[in-house]
Each structure stands twice: as structure tokens, then as C-alpha cells.
Image 1 (cartoon, helix red, strand yellow):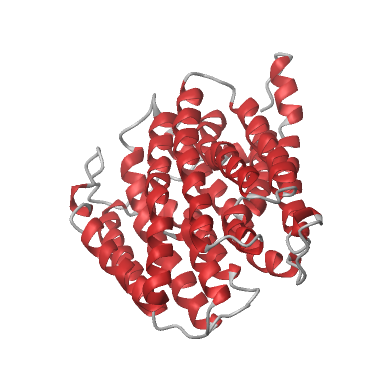
Image 2: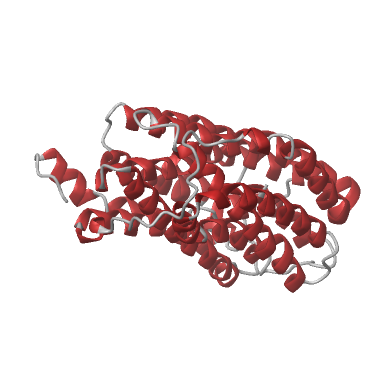
Length: 384
């Protein structure tokens, strides 16, 4: 749902009471980034208090529903940030991470593929949801749409939650074994961490601004929904494929170099130079395929840093936190980078010139961080 906020942003931007508010992107970046920020706090909590998993899942489920209903009554940006942003992301955080902890118990040898499939599940819903949201917003407005999403979330997820269980029996005592932080002494960790942060700083800009970009070219809201659906479709394919490749021992360093590198080229050319629909469609597919599958690498990065489940889970939480920091920061950054004028003859339509440039630079730096690691691996020297 949060990944399709671009549809809401386009609607809010063109309708009262949020008309022409350039800071609407803050809502979306909090909704997506806050979820990742909670990872390093949730993972130790779930490790030491495994019996909290089930209560947390139900609490998060209820809070997510409440946030959507609350957002339907919002008439100011502050209220929208608090409900569709902050409360929503808290609810999803305490709902999602216990489920991920349970799922992590089931996979070892094929963990990359398993995580790719789990991550791709969000993309599957994203293929249909943008069109549904655009149609509902156009016909009924945002209050009714948000309430309808709350009802749908209740009906579709409530009956499934009791079926989700971990493989291992829950401990009746509090886990006291300390977490292994020896990976912090490895230079490899800091290369990976910086790469993840840079990717997070630019990753969500296209999904936030492509619908507005299409609107500036004169296309109707359904075209913005099309871009998000194509992004989700490509992301599904990319995440499963990258998960499979990591399990087949394709170098995670090579993939971490290529995925943001291709994303950078697509951003600076297809998006920045786009004056019509065709290049934007191609961009949405390429960006979804490459940038959308980057997070699947986290599982394999963690396995390179340590050979036990606790290290993999801890590093995953740190990577998620760093991505969350990047996501949350992009809201205010995007609001300051967007320009007021629109000129189709200028790169990025003038209004989005700095948005495109910033996003491209983030992906370029993310890719370049992997260059020394990749060439060390090619020469047979392992960076640890």
C-alpha cells in the first residue's frame, strides 16, 4: 500500500485541501522509511522475547487499520503525516518484522530465493493496486478510498494471520545469548552499509514523482498508476531472479555493482530526457527490474558477514535501518529540489531536473562503492 503512495500524492496535489502542497512527499517517505527504521529495534526484541511475536502481529494489524481510518478524516498535512505516515508505519513495522522472523526459520540453503519471493509479494499487489486506487480516488475521493482500504485490509489479511507460524517451538524463557557483533570489525560491512544507505537515499524518488511527471506532460492519473504497476511487475520478476542468482553463487558484489549502475543510466537518460509516454514506460520497467530487486541482496550480504542466523538477522536489521534513514530524508530533500516552472524543452521538464539528477547521483555512488570490492574478488583477494 505505501509503495503506491505516488497515486495518492498525485491526487492530493491536485485536489483540496492539499492542493499544490510540495511537501506531500514527506507522508510517503515516512510510510516507507519508518518501516525500515524499526528493523534494528524489532530484531533484538523478537530474539529475546520470542513469545511477543503473535501479540505484536495482531497489535500492528489493528494499528494499521486505525491509521487508514484516521487518515480518511485528515484535512491538514500535519494530520496526514501523523496518520498515513507515522501511525501507519508503526503499525506495519510491528506487523511485518515478527512475520519475517517466523519465515526466516524455514529457509537456510535457499534463503536468497525465499526472501526474493517474499519481497516480490508486495510487487504482485502493486500490479493491480495503483489502478484500483486511482479509480477509487477519482470517483469517491480520498476519505472513502482510505476507508475502503481499511476494510479490504481487515478482510483480506485478518483470516491469514493465524496460519503464519515459525518452524521452531517458542522458548518459555527469555533468550539471554548475546548478539554476535564481530562483523562490525570487518571492512566489508561498511562497504555494504554505505551502499545500502546511498541506494535508500534515491530509491523511492521515481515511484513518488513519476505520476506527477506524467501529469506535467498532460497525461491523466491512470497513466501515473500505469507506471507504478509496471514498476511493480518488473520488481516481482527482478526480486525472484536476483534471489535465485544469489543462491546459485552469483557474486553479490557483482550484482550490487550492476543493479544500481543500470538504474543510474536509466534515470539520467530515459527519465530525464523523457518528453512522451514510451520512454517513461521503458524506464518504469528497467528501474523496477534493477532498482526494485536490490534489497534482495541484503540476505546474502549478511551471510557473507557471518555464518549463523543471528548475524544474518542483525545485519539485515541494520541494512533496513540505513535504507529507512535514506527514505525518510528523501521527503524533505524532494520538497526542496522540486522547482515551480515547467518547460518541456528543458531536461527533466525543468520542474524535476534536480529530482532526476539527485536520484541518478545516489545510484551512481551506490554502484561505485562496490567497484573496489568487485575487483578485489576478481583478483582472488577477499575483502573481509
